[in-house]
Length: 111
Image 1 (cartoon, rainbow, N blue to C red):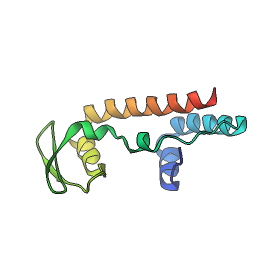
Image 2 (cartoon, rainbow, N blue to C red):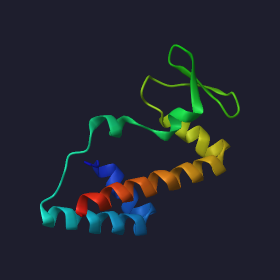
Image 3 (cartoon, rainbow, N blue to C red):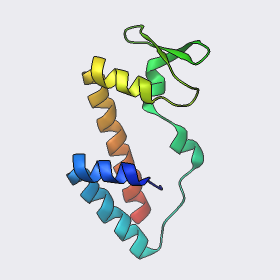
Image 4 (cartoon, rainbow, N blue to C red):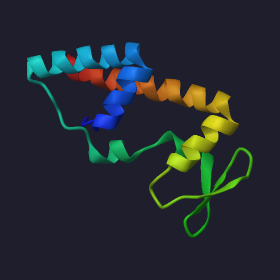
């Protein structure tokens, strides 16, 4: 998985323990020479898709509360931000699941 500099900086500052785990895993993977390129399709998946439905051209509705947000196709950051601010319990549980899945996939690459 290739991460952008902004994401790396965010993880290092806001989530230091997760960043340390990911960094240790990355170093072990690099050292072992077993780096595998992740499937492009899996990179495109996002948990926010479960919580929105199309409501028009570039418009998506939150299935939890019905609020309609303007979003370009394939970019779900507005919905993620909406869920984070209006439905924090959902955001927290989905974020934890996503983090665990990412750590598991990185760990599998090491062994």
